[in-house]
Image 1: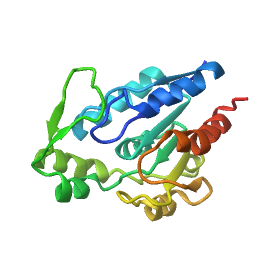
Image 2 (image 1 turned 90 degrees about the vertical axis):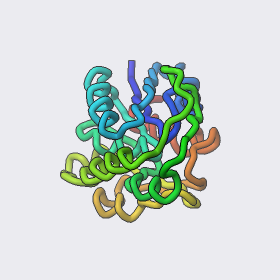
Image 3 (image 1 turned 120 degrees about the vertical axis):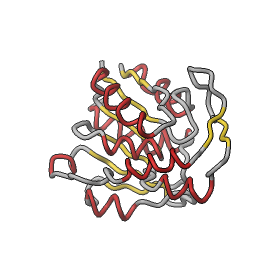
Length: 198
């Protein structure tokens, strides 16, 4: 049985609708989708995800937004990065600093909100120093970038293309968040191709 690790975006949870949709679409094809709650602290999140991936040994990792930033750092795995956000520190500084943020989806620990503070932003700055580094020819073959044509929140297309080239670079009709149409039209065919599903 094939396995996908889905990594959600900022202020979300493993219970996000995208993970649920992927489970529903891929169940009959024998694919399991695991989607944990990512720790809010970036300093905790990356080690957590590295350990989680090592335990689960996914055939494919898919991340969206902040989750795509983390997915890019999980070298050695086949990955799809959807609208990766490589500048979380800057985004949070100008839009979220000092705010209590509500989780958009139910967290397993029952947490409802979290605060964006200077410590979180400093941790994102440290993580971002690791992004788009140590890109080998082998890594270029293991990663795909999907970018919404009209994404109003994040635009890291040029940085991704500079690091990884345009061989696995795709632009889809849509914005920042995935919806059911985009999942079916743009994401599922790529998943089936990479996992060699019929």
